[in-house]
Image 1 (tube, rainbow, N blue to C red):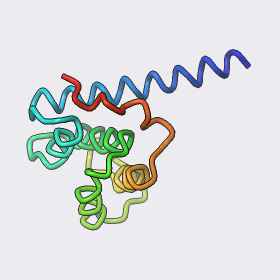
Image 2 (cartoon, rainbow, N blue to C red):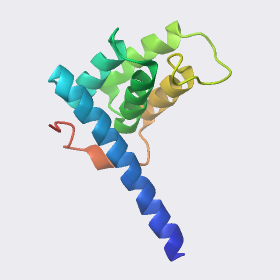
Image 3 (cartoon, one colour):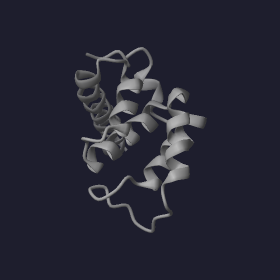
Length: 119
């Protein structure tokens, strides 16, 4: 029981750290709030697909409806994919997951309320 609780809270810490790292990296480059900076990173020509997929994941974790227009546009433009090649292309699976979370929230988005101005 105690081990399960520790694993549960550790998972939250890992997710939180990943979102914060993605936000800070994007904010350092684009100088906007977290969501706007992540959206700019996803649209940037000079970013790797791994960086873009990580930014899409972070947008989903944040579950901010402001990201929905970009995510809807990506969902329409990306072909159906059987697997996700995080280093080879933008993953429709990650985009759809982010849309689901932005539309309905998720179990972790409460952790970021008031923290999206990280810098």
